Length: 456
Picture (cartoon, one colour):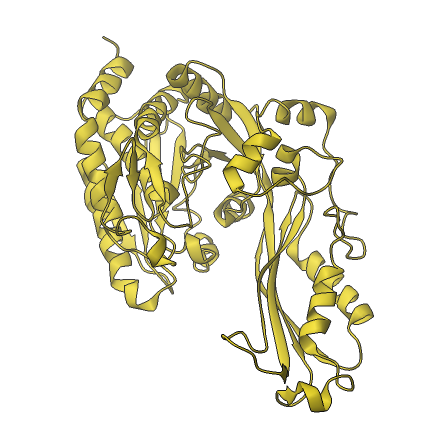
């Protein structure tokens, strides 16, 4: 039996133990955005430190940041082996609305083939799967096939505010040949895929102020312009009925998709019926010139994330609100940058906000879009690993979400990232009843074993 076969067999003999480890990790309420959960972020970091040591990684430390700690670890570094930096995050989203959970979010429960818990899919299962792969290799081989470094942060769900400074201060410590980001998914349980592109982000908050205080709409209505109505007009006119964004010059830096890339993306099976079933909407919407796959991963978009103004309680109150506020975000594609979008947005607002109100725009978060070369050695190693486990070659796709760390590591370390995770599109990440499909979890363990053996 080969070393690879021995590790795979060991993983198959320890499926129950690995599922129990996933339950244990998911029971830690490591919600990064809630101050009263800060102690649980430290508990999760300690859990990782202990588990890394169990897998044979002895150089492990918990390093402080201005926010939640970072777990850094490394194996013995040998000159003749390439170095892989493994990234993950141990923080999770809040559980709201709690009443929609069928079981307590931090009391993991198996129903059918899935484990339900907050963080199960995003992304504790991916971390446990990789550590399980290391565990299997550690117990069946004399050494790891690669030099390995680990960077596990606790702030990804709040935009990774401490990470850029940490990378700046520890660039020598983090030097590597490539990064493995376990935060991601595949197209379906029987359709492996590799995400090679992610959209960036530009997130804003716009406040419109009218009178000094709320006014009686009967006495003042018709003579004082309503800030809520002004805000709604401004937001509505930033995008047309077909999903085209109207900011001046917005598409000038959008790189057109090549015919070869559109052909590759067309292999991803996503029909109108699939979309309706996945989302619950009556039908899809957006730029008619582009497919659903292209719209959601390779084209920019604009969404209003929240809006507030005036009276929103039960019953009626005839008020003319003094102010209105909205939060909205642009998803960006390669060559677009948040700073340029902010300039375009301010140009639009200067031209369209009436003199009857005052306004303030606040930029809350920028993240850079990422596209990875699909033919690099480590992407090929990932593709071959997926094919070995799933029995078919993976699809290559671009996803609409944003993972800030990929852009940060590319900019500061000059290395590319391969995204290899195993959450499914319907896993409910960031939503009630988040879950991980356990057969896919175990396939993920085997894929990581194959990947580490392939790229050496």
